[in-house]
Length: 205
Image (cartoon, rainbow, N blue to C red):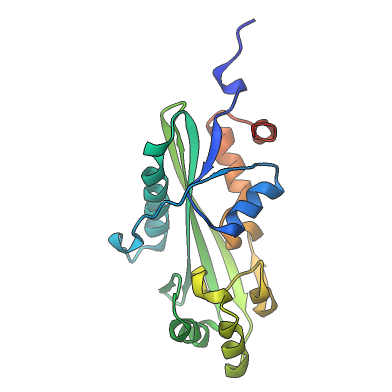
């Protein structure tokens, strides 16, 4: 009996040091190899959020690829769009406060780009998940208190759905995990498109 090359899946590499993305993968049974892409996101500029997150996710995965062989490498990138304005990571308290003063009481679209480089099959897939997010009309004092926790500073859109920021989200429409930084249903679909079953990666530690 000849065993298919896909019966033994490649090692799974996450091109990110995001604790949230790692936890999502661990929750569904995947223990990824973690590698910081260290890609300079400022190199990529676009007013099209779909193109921007997909390009950034691809470059993050590509920057890690030379360090591995015969692996499956996942790169991701997220951003928020509210009333046509793109919000990435604020990196400073001042920007985070400004972000919240603009997005409070509004509905936004959270884009997460996903790029998988399958070195075993010499194939690359790039996709994007979009989730609608309704923000509560947060008062200035609460905004300042939230920003002072430090949580929003490294999060796309200045909030973390898997943290204290969940208190200020009235409703989401679409994939929950996509807002955290990695759409698990979309990842499953991409793996299936490459010929893998998600369950194959449970015992591939």
